[in-house]
Length: 138
Length: 138
DNA sequence: CCTTGACCTTCCAATCGCTGGAATCACCAT
DNA sequence: ATGGTGATTCCAGCGATTGGAAGGTCAAGG
Image 1 (cartoon, chains in turn orange, yellow, cyan, blue):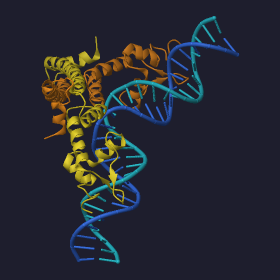
Image 2 (cartoon, rainbow over the protein chains, first blue to last red; image 1 turned 180 degrees about the vertical axis):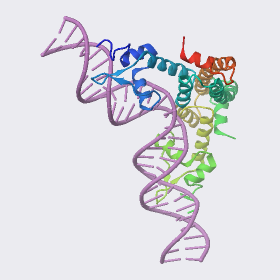
Image 3 (spheres, chains in turn purple, orange, blue, green; image 1 turned 45 degrees about the vertical axis):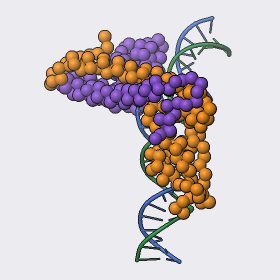
Image 4 (cartoon, each protein chain N blue to C red; image 1 turned 135 degrees about the vertical axis):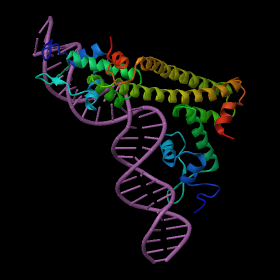
């Protein structure tokens, strides 16, 4: 059974290789309903069509851009339905950009505070340290 | 029992208010060994000394700077042991700054890619969208 | 004294996005 | 047959919290 399911269908391992999504992760995605339940061979192996592999690639790329699972559900839906307005897609993307900006700002604030403290810390074998003094509070 | 345990000891609720760390979170910190087990009244209530409340404040501030629990363990240890060299503290801080930088860079890369795509998306009611085209891959 | 209500206790579960392991079964080669 | 690889299921854990349920305790008021 080198060609499960017939028309270009592949097993989960090959789908994983082709999409870059771990086989285990594919099953997880199915279990949470991000992707529909895959077809099965007579013996129970999952079968993936090229189109389904494309969905996996889509998911992988979206994850690499930091989209959450729920947002990806939306995006896949918009992708499947070609008649959808691009405004909706842009809105989802913009919301995510805003979230990224917020997170970046948060981390940058931490970094700045810490860098200031670290710069003020002489960092030799003397015990006194502005970092600990700051953490210990006023 | 307005003054559990005698010498300035307070209940978990007051320790929470005084430190800014949620009571539930205090119990969690104790359960994972970040802070030592608190003393107890005869009836089993946890009792916190002013010094212990200070530790909680320390933890809170360190968390707000994004330090992980394990790093905070180290920092608390260094804080308690006043004879420790500041170099050690600075090293922990620097490692965390580096981690923050890496995370920021990762998120900024996502943001930049996404912003480029969003800018190229006209965002009206036409269905064609560069964002989806990118996600769908080459 | 008894109730009310605010507080405390413990334990268990969910979050998010995976990742790992264990036990079992299916396939293909020799 | 036997071995090796890959498939299946389920269960559990990561980090750092947050939530809820079920029950014990305290101080005050009627």
